[in-house]
Amino acid sequence: QVQLVESGGGLVQAGGSLRLSCAASGRTFGSYAMGWFRQAPEKEREFVAVISASGASTRSADSVKGRFTISRDNAKSTVYLQMNSLKPEDTAVYYCAASLLSGVVVITEQFAYWGQGTQVTVSS
Image 1: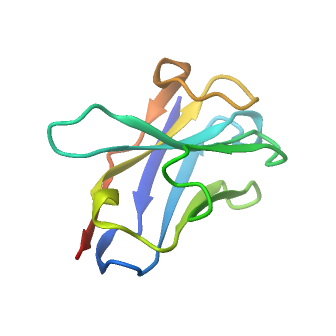
Image 2: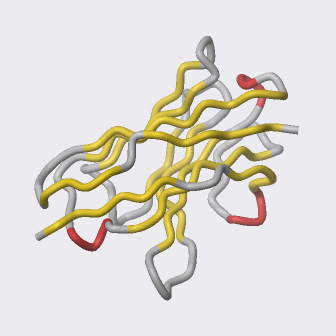
Image 3: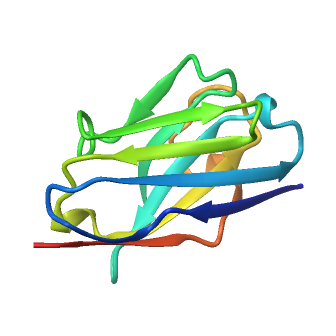
């Protein structure tokens, strides 16, 4: 079992920045990939970014490339999502998720554990 707790969401103006954190407990943190997803009102949950267990590989959605950066600190059992140049369309509930796999995975079904989500609102 893995427990995930997100923090760092909030209200920010367009062009601003936020850093989300996700603290994990349970299984050995350095053994599984971690991802961030988001869900806007009346929309499907969508992939944002993923990082491999070692942190050596990452992948991001085209919509956030060049603006969002995923990273992890295995010593602190924490994954981060640095979000810069935020846009109103980034407004959503952001979820971190833990996979049972160690490599880069992007499909929702490949993630077994989910946090409760944190709201990010970007005003224009």
